[in-house]
Image 1 (cartoon, rainbow, N blue to C red):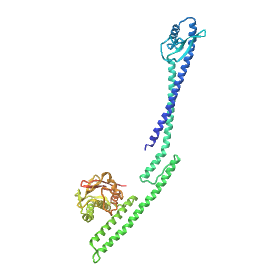
Image 2: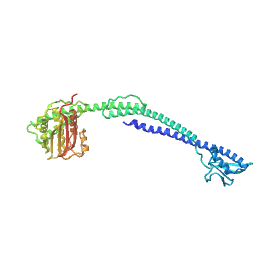
Image 3: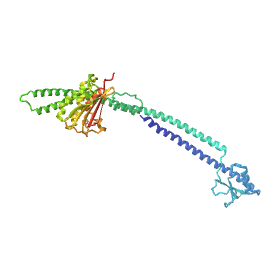
Image 4: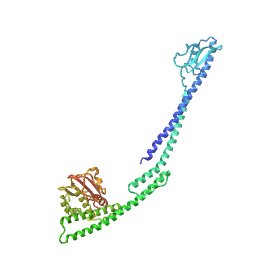
Length: 438
């Protein structure tokens, strides 16, 4: 689960922003402060220069000479930056430029202004200025980096502490979804999350009781249905012996209904017991070929009545011994054959095959068209699911393939459905030759 990185990364971004923005403001503030300091210093030095220039002019010295001496001495860092103009703005000395002056100061003699001194160029930073600025920038960078590291550590701790109960809550919901209803958790974290965990545990416990009750009811209902199905068979046997005899077609219909009724009860019992994990399986040595032939013989009458040819293919010619529950495997074949008979039209085929697959055996049942969408094939094994592409006749329980899956899983195998090479549905059952050792 990516809850921790998903929370930590935005917090880390906010920590970076919280550190960089104040750092940038500090740099801007320092830059503006330095500009103001330089401007103030220029005004002070320009005032001193104007005073000296006025005294020199009173002794008859020309402004060109005064500026030249200033440039030569680099006095007060004003060299090359001073321009002297007449009161009307006409240049007298210094660099000619049309840019706005940084500062101006009147040059007076005997209290009368005779010219104006201007600073017309930006100051040039000295090595000392650069070292000072470098020191300030490094200090600000260190402060920003330190602040970012502290915020990053705080973000990490916050994300870790906050995401831990969230991860625990996610684990609980995943366990409930996967059918684990006995869940434990550590009651740590925000009170709302702890309360949610408690509610989830109560919900899981209630659902577990309801699910157990549902499965138990299904087993009880299936057992109760078996008795009238058996009694119905006994009554039909009595009807066969009455004189005058009952109409043969009516008896055949009643016998088919009895067969379906009994199979529904068996299927419901198998599915319910499998849900409870109590489907009884008695592993003994059996021959899969004999089980296939028995299944064909047991369903031949039903297949003949439906006008469907029930046949075999790819059966080994030698005896095979495996450890399966023979009765359950015959029930498996019966469920698969009955499912195919409901969909295969008159004149169609149902083909049973057996192939070796390493330490397992592959049981294959193919039927004729119509087929089924491969994307929906696995849903056929869900109880009461019916494919819209294979509309079946009424009276079917919808438990046949669910029963088959229950029996296969009890044998530690797997069952798959897909497209058959003869146009319909192919069901493949893969069973280990022997059950795994506990």
